[in-house]
Image (cartoon, rainbow, N blue to C red; front, top):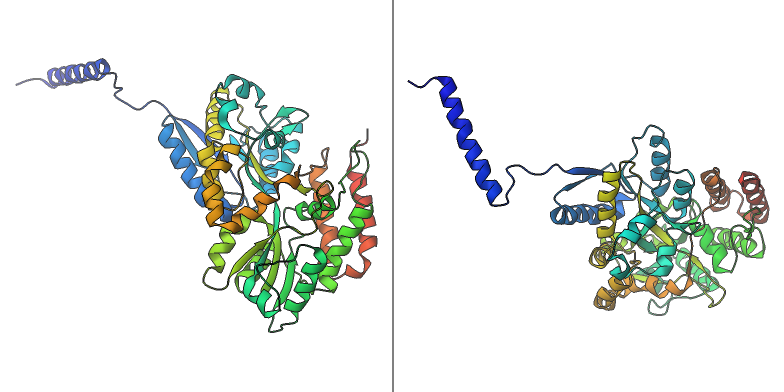
Length: 431
């Protein structure tokens, strides 16, 4: 009878022969170690399906990298706060989706990896088709810190059924704020709990405020970034317009998420917010009423600008090997085919010119998705306030806007603007 030791020697010999046979065929007996990347993104209600599919496609093409998503953040500001907080202990995620206006904060704090060396070493990057103007949105002081991923601009969503009941024509939507306000008043007068319009004043704190000011040719700060500039005539018009939506058109006091629910329920006629919500709004309104999308009002060539919303993908990993894997992931995510798929699934439009070409037939068949694309000539940077108090400045603006949007100080809008400017001025860096 063979001893136990003899049987073990024979078993190991068989295993060794098998391993040698696999090696001769170029096959490894076990999978290579994977690099695990933790990724944090925002707005799961908009991005979850697209991000889940993106991870699957990437890992199928890159089996040596495993993508692990953190619990998504509600908005970009929470992503920023998480990275700044966790960077102290080195526990931050490896890749983050960040709002274009928060890229500056992460770069200023040293939490973001500069992408220029990775771009320079990537021989195929220049042929990917990324728009130079859009790539500039991911730069701070001339250095690249983010690859723009999904871009949005403000649009107006209309309940076409309510528009008709109010005497309007969904095929000829108003193009001026006076026309929008007049239509909203008529919808509001229909009664039965119907509201005319909601302007998403609270979305990401100040994006829709910037839209009002920049559309009139204004700016947030002066060229030196030492003095508030949104309190000039453009800002006075902007705060007055918001107040008139409350006092004249009966805008309800809601958050933008609650307004979306009211719009889906068929009791809100016009919803001014980001094109990023288009796919979601189409889904929740399907079968209830006809949806129409109109451009942002009063756009004047050569004068008007709109802040390009949306986000970019940033590398925050400190480990060099993870940085290389993270570059492969964000490069894959922004390739034309992936960018086009995100656009189809959301309502954002791609920053990639080749992706835009892939979407021509899609836009022709889905004209609502093409509205924001028509606004691209007006796109400009989503302004980021400088210094360590940048987030506080956004909070100040949001709080002051709320006092008008709630109706509490809608009759005192000019004074609210003065107070807003004073508070933000106090938060700017003293140079």
